[in-house]
Length: 129
Image (cartoon, rainbow, N blue to C red; front, side, top):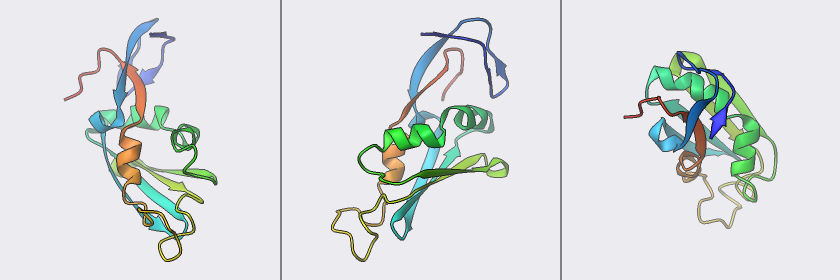
């Protein structure tokens, strides 16, 4: 797929650079838990140079779409550049919360794994280890 030029983690894309789809699992670690009826998901870049890509591509809207049918409320994103991380708060995502939810994962512990399955476009020349 060809995309217009953008800046990603020190890479300045030339005109119409080839892009490839990559799961977030290749670029980041994640942790999640509950805050009442909200799921709290932290996304931490595996390398500092991956953080600008995550910041650009993993928006609150993208996360909301990824969790369609699970997250009934809004998604908030908080940037933690000193940690090369993003934190997402998914409101109304746990069926009422840990003490009242009938869900198998009432504390939202699997939400991080679900987020890491999200695929984003990255420059083909980006070396992912």
